[in-house]
Image 1 (cartoon, rainbow, N blue to C red):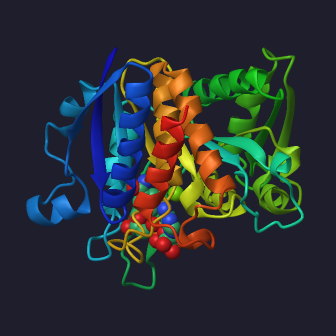
Image 2 (image 1 turned 30 degrees about the vertical axis):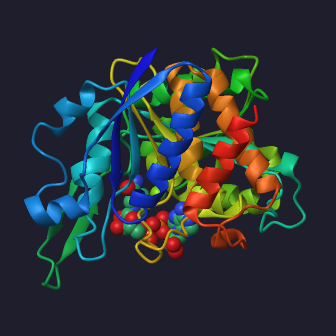
Length: 352
Ligand code: NAI
Ligand code: MG
């Protein structure tokens, strides 16, 4: 088999973590007798400085021809930070109906969670973040900002179809896991949008009687991430709540650099996009010190999505072997470089 992958490193540490991920993918592909054809696209905030746009006008048409998109992160301190999501990330997620954002939170072997009293088995859940609508539809305005009457709005949008789609995915995932789904909401105060969200999810829950369904408010959920992460299996939540909670998820795994994600179009009509949960980390870019494990794990999610389950499992066991033997980057107290981590995982693959 031959897979066509569009590679968008983006900005900042994207240029370090994405090559690390590709190195691992190349190694695992040759072990499992499939091929990866990569095409690189230099899009993002750096591209914007030269061309006035984050990707060319035919960028989406170009991406659509691929089996998957492997992405780093976009954004640079000197570029208006309202643009990366609008002109690249959300645009791709929305256009390609990647309405599921799949974000596993799992403590890796050899890593001490900042929650020191928690063991590996206590931290193992998945955040399913609605990825196409909600709080991030960017529908609003700033009116008369410099006058005493100034005001600003951002109107959320939740549709029955959008809620049902992501809910069905999350319940089916729960059926394959520990059969527990927690809807993280705030319907006690967002009494229109999130009350509707809860109502539609409760309806969908009726079709999955084998899954234990419960609802929790986000303020309590944030505390529970820290105090009792073992109570979670699948979390289903909105675009903004999921964005915030998944960084907290990265933190309890020991570093934001560990968190992987898949922006999934479950129907496979369009390519899905795989990226670490973090951003372009300009504060550490260019030093070969970024933790590439979130990006490498995202590559494993990509191979799994393409149907290469054994290859994906090999990458995960390579990651686990590497953290177990304490080959770690500085963010988790080690001395290894970004490329050292990739090399360590590739070494592990060659011993299989
Ligand atoms: P960030 O996630 O880039 O960084 C937050 C902190 O975590 C920084 O101290 C950084 O050094 C650290 N960090 C992140 N990834 C790491 C890794 N792999 N290894 C070690 N340390 C790591 O978030 P921030 O600083 O809020 O945003 C920076 C830029 O990234 C902004 O322009 C923002 O808009 C953009 N961004 C882009 C995203 C995307 O393209 N999907 C997602 C989030 C932010
Ligand atoms: Mg985020």
